[in-house]
Length: 246
Image 1 (cartoon, one colour):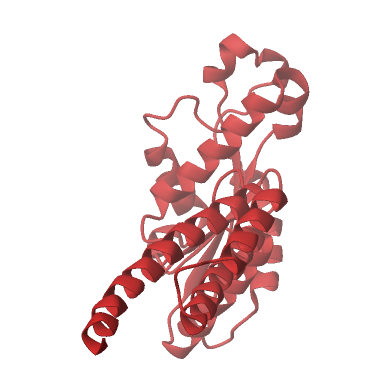
Image 2 (cartoon, rainbow, N blue to C red):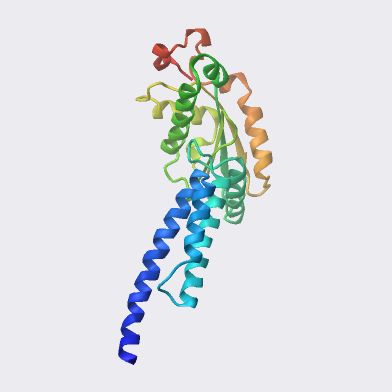
């Protein structure tokens, strides 16, 4: 009797692990899609979970619900279209990076990008063309800052506004940032039309993430920060989108 009981425990443990993985994945996918009906269905299945002891069932439900909470939290901090942090996520993670920079007496730079003429692209070429440019800008940031998620933070703050917080000295000025962007866009089609601004974090006179964003945006509005050709929007058409330059 005791031998049968002991042999059943590993089997039950395996069942719990398999079911937890299945339910967690289903909840994560449903949360990402905003599928309330599917979330309700999976939670109902959790409550009816059979073949486990009461303690195992409760543990399984707790883990799955925790996964759901993490998925919802991630969705609240990320931009759906690009996968980058949204403004809230950028501010939260960026504040932590600045705290570490101040502790380690390390300077940091906030690079602010604006996709020029995006509203006109929406009007003349439609949503798919505008979204293509937005996704391309997100991918450009990933190419520029390959260490993001560790020492760098990337975000899409508004429809046409992006930002990166980095300790990389290659982005210590607008001119330096523009140079890095030009290199990254040599093989890009279409090349992006961007305006660029940079703000600096001094660990010995620290400022908050909001102040840095405001400073970088002011810097971006200077004429010298414009990058590229800025074609008149009337020259942009579906067949000429590859000529759109930032």
